[in-house]
Length: 581
Image (tube, rainbow, N blue to C red; front, side, top):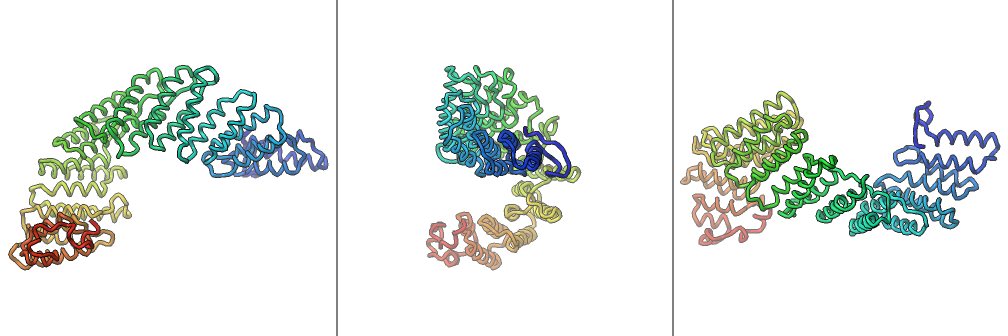
């Protein structure tokens, strides 16, 4: 067979039957001066075939072919070489091994051997095509020819023709595989076939429909297997992975998730929960519930986001905590962060506390960052700012103690904390926001420029907006905003966007004296830069109108008549000014 064993340095320290018989054959040919029987040659060819596989460094199919070319062969000889090429075909491999095996099949067909050998040859080549990419059409031909031989078709052949079509990347391949699985199921249920269908055949068709983004089709195959075939096929044992595959198909594209998607996944999960006592292999796991929670979050028809928390409770009860992951909690928290629930902040803080007290999961960077994001939307700005700062400090302390990467504050963590300071009333919020950005840059540079900490334009924008919302020490606040604005302009990898200029004009309007030349100078200079960058937006235009410039000055700046200053829209401005909005 294919068993290998340790030997000397010959063959890289390992050997097998093919290697040993090859050596013996060479000795026999020398001793008997080439007079070796065909039976002996066929034994060696058989060994080549048995040892051939896609992972071996030694290409036994090529050796078998070389031996065949120098002997007076028979049908058995050709069959062994055919098998060697077939077994050497790797799964989803672009090699031509399956097609080489088919060449030898055609050679056999020219002088047909006894039906048993020919039937086995078809079986072997069909299996090779089931692994090859683009081999479905050829597999179809082989399967059709195999049905003409008056020898029962083994279940492996039915499985292999299905696998061949599920691996084919052309349109309609999943539908073709479904035709075969439905026909197989019908033949089995009517007693035409007695051997139990294999789970891998159903699972492969489900995967094919998932890749085709057709979840309803995948679900139909699931219920065909579960509710029609499985009750009779005692050896057919579906697994949680197969069920999850259908669930994942429904949430693969966030743009297409609807209430119908959620209902479908919910029905599947409920079935799993109700039947996992009888079928332990389909017991839902954390991935199952994660798909359900994702569908619930994105379906768009939730009357209350608390439904998601109910699902989380349901998951913990089913899994008894053991397979619950951070991701399950983070998905729920993210749903709150994206919602308009006024109590979102307090609810995610409750979930954070629940995670900290859990024996199975602990919060990570994503958890803390999501909680802070929820806080930025809180009506209680001062509470949000103080809590965000505490959470960032807490996360950083954990990271400094453990040095675990999943606990390292990232760029978004810092950005959301700075954003939380924007509406707070504390006097030093701008200075504190700037220190946080400087801390992020320092950590980024000291961590070999870790991608997760790479600064973005967002914290710079938030600091400038924070300054615009500050009523304390206007001169110093403006200086800090100006420094941040200039740092962004000078940054080698970042550049201001429309929000940068909007917040900068807002800062100038609120912090600079409206009756001085300085205000006018800053507004005009920044607007020219904004036009040059092509990021003049409607928000920028509104802030320009709120400046102390006269209608004549604004008309000159906007290149329009003074009387049109109030009514002009972004679409009426010069196209280069708005090209990047």
